[in-house]
Length: 319
Length: 282
Image (cartoon, rainbow over all chains, first blue to last red; front, side, top):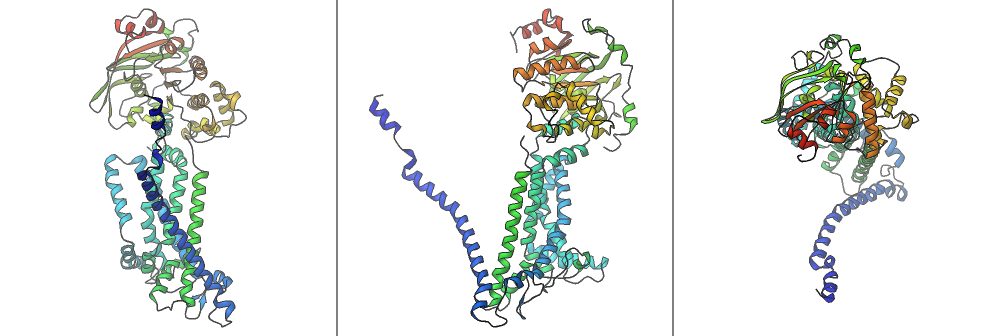
């Protein structure tokens, strides 16, 4: 081969052929789409929510058309007709659904994951895993009806004073809904624990219980925590089931007090559905409150994601 | 798995007087030492694959018994028969008798968890737990409910494993931060901390560099003063250096020859063993 040939051959520049350029741009656009969408939504939320607090307030000093940021964030009464926008009434009931579903889903989910990863035979796993996936695939509105029609009457037997709409059945049903998420992400984390560690444990004369709880769970902790946070984010953002089961009356309840779970209230997501269904006029205060709630919800889930990232990195073990 | 800490489980493995084997001096052949492990026609199948055929051998007390042979000859499989680690593999099936001080460990009433507390194991790849060095060493004591001065046991075990000087100032750092050779010595310390009778080692130096390997080899020879060590190795020089007895497994899962190490390497009975040792085969 002559030197000339070598020269042309080595400088062909395959990186900028039309086909490479086209595919590269296409893939970039696809990737950029999600970023652009996110930024647009967040931008819209922030702009509209800030109007809720600013536009009406400084320009016209008319009572009922102003919403102060302080009142919004610290108020505990949510009555649109009376122009009272205390978001804590909504946040408290969202918090209750989150706490209630966590109490149900975290232990059950982790226990399920331990069973699937450490105890189940191949046969048991082949039945359980698809069942969990189906549980995750049930439409959430069906869960809501399930809560309203079956869980609430059943709870009524135990707690005669319970309302038709109550936080307890909403929490239970959201808890059931997020079990598959906790279980499958935790199970992935446990399955990723190197088998050498289990062998080491068994070789020391550890029982199955010793190995599962003393070796596998601690080694998979970062994944298990991640599953918790992701599942709780899902519980916070869950809409249909709580809209159907939790009630329509905004009320500030104490999330720490077990008795308040027997009452109905209005979680943030359900409040937004309610606003959208009512005859609110575009541009009005009620309309803008929608964006303010949306922003609060977004900030809460964002914080959860940041925590999840931090925890995953903090507790990750490198083998 | 409940009741594994029940003292009756320990009684199932009959303990004989250990002092008779200790009298054999360093230089004398250890033929007279008592037999700790005795296998009688052990056969192992993995599904339809016949991995070990009629293995019979007697492993003497307080000595190093090496098992050598080409890859896939079943030497690790046999090692895992001794503490019933093969139980953990769904498709594995073991037939035959294998006795530890006279008690058949494959009897129905034997709890493999109790057995493994008497027969410690060190694996091919160092596998410390993602816990501190200290926690790693006392793991066996904790799960077995052994009480005692943990600080003292940790120091003793790490000294025994020739790791103490390197880690004594950072006992509460993660065991995973150590080098490969240190991790393997940590695993040895962990295995000997609860004071087992037998120590099984499955190619403990194969993942290590030459310096770490020679440290482990010295350690194995020393450990044989107190423990019965059974070591699997693919390194024939290693077997020749450190073992008192050598078992040669060849392809097909059969035990071709088992004798004093010196005899195996200098004057083996079988032509196949001689071919293998001189490198003509395997």
